[in-house]
Image (tube, rainbow, N blue to C red; front, top):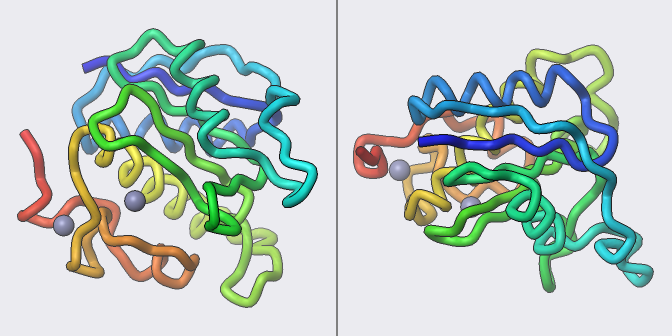
Length: 170
Ligand SMILES: [Zn+2]
Ligand SMILES: [Zn+2]
């Protein structure tokens, strides 16, 4: 399986590399890092002052040539009524998006600063999670499973970066 990673906007190089490595390790994928593309103007929402996650998935699937295409961005993204998301994917879809914006925050909303390790661990978990959805995996009740729904960084930090035995596919 080929997975293309598409940086959208100005993205931390280490985060792009880390995301690619995690996908190679967990899904045995051939990961291709595409050249970066700008964040499209029409993804910006004046009301929330954030970016529409669905539009960023569209960027990934239009630029990427993989069976799965991961847009990775540092802008803050929202999805419908949810005021922010770490990422978004369509079940069994071709694309997903991961935003590093909130993964660089502490649980109380400050910045992680020099804690690169925690940041990179979160990037790995989120990218494995979103690609899991594109492979047909739904949210899992096991809170240690990478497919558990984890809307806060504390919950992301608490889980493993691998799917549990119920979720492991292929
Ligand atoms: Zn999810
Ligand atoms: Zn699971």
